[in-house]
Image (cartoon, rainbow, N blue to C red; front, side, top):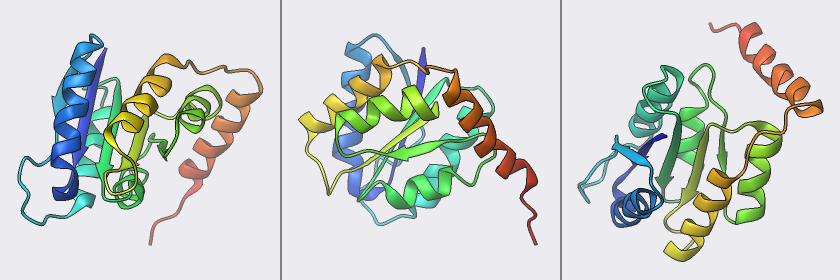
Length: 150
């Protein structure tokens, strides 16, 4: 499985550690993030990973910024993306099982590296349960289809 990872300037160190962790777990990792500590715009990296996931260049995505929120908001603007911000492993597991989240986001200023690893592992180990959850995901995607942009 191939994982795309993106980040802004606030998360370079955490991104590098998560990339190594993913490789240790046996995943192929594609770096779409910045490797610079110079201030940059998280939205560009959220969009970059989201477009790679939507185009099936990678199977799933991981996004990291200061809080995880801004970068996930940008990712969620891309059609077909369900990016979820998680600060603990229970939610990470549930967003895969119930929401079929294809991008995980978290904040380098919010959680430490060991918690980040636990979150990533829980999310990757979980599988979408389908059933009643599929109907709900379909409803979310229908909202996206009906959206009218001005």
